[in-house]
Length: 232
Ligand code: URA
Image (tube, rainbow, N blue to C red):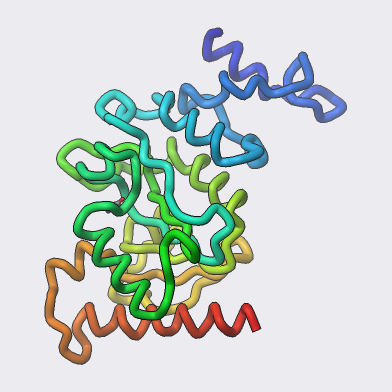
């Protein structure tokens, strides 16, 4: 089926049904960035993951080994959004499994949060950018509908945005991460906190008061306190 035919599936008929035939053809939706992925497209994460692994909405699809969709609890109260998969993630198909991920797991564990139970973790873009470069705005835009669907499906109480790429990609806020980390933002009626990216902490190992690691410790305690407040 051509891109044009796929696009036609999204033409709304007068009574609001999708496409002339009145249903979405789920396997055919998102292969080109021209094809929209409207909210509500995916009933569960499984077809979304399948599409990500077949996706060529941007050129990152040409060089990936695996699309890296997410891991953790699909009903987690906290969702963490990173930047993009690295080499370990591309090889395994799982986000945050390299050094950054190990540090992140430790940070979470320090306040009693377990990734597999309390967290769903994913990235702004699902495929590894060559040489681990920052994903381009076009790549982020092509992939964003998948992320918005993930947020809708998981419906977390709190979203943690790790690093400036995630903050800008999700909320559009262009302020530097040093400025806004640790502050609560409201985005689309959701509670979000920007935090440092764990890779930044790996490059700045000092634990002195005021250091990035020390600030992260303050932030993760604030997240734990907010979660307890919400749950009580
Ligand atoms: N850094 C990220 O932002 N995401 C990953 O999945 C791994 C490293």
